[in-house]
Length: 196
Image (tube, rainbow, N blue to C red):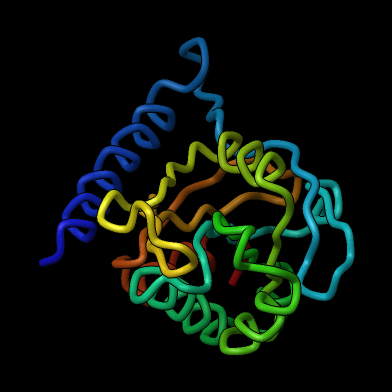
């Protein structure tokens, strides 16, 4: 196992622990989970999107990058397979979002080509470094350039948490999955939360 994979697994475990703590205790002990929030980004067609653009829709939100060799494609494929197993009524309630953590390389054009490999409802989102950082902070997402690749020009990997967040139609956190969660578990959860 490569060093960056070991670090990624460790970080994912920590993030899951933090998310679980929020679920159990919430803010001020009132059970309100502080995950999610406002963002302003550009989608894979060049259209400006904000968190308000998705109000009224449940969202599956995943942060990653198109040059990710394994974890991101796995997470997005699991998400795609789960959505494909839902009936049309539930599918129409869900908008899957892929928010890049690598805006330098993940341009609108790059995202447009990448998201076409997954579910047709998947929306890719990019923005400035600052816009991405604000969105990542809102979702408690960790990311940084791998220390193995420091000094590399345009060929680098990013360490990042690998969480799929399920948010309700008001943008409030419901639950989360990882790229290792089984498709059947995601399907069962979505049916339970969104209807038969």
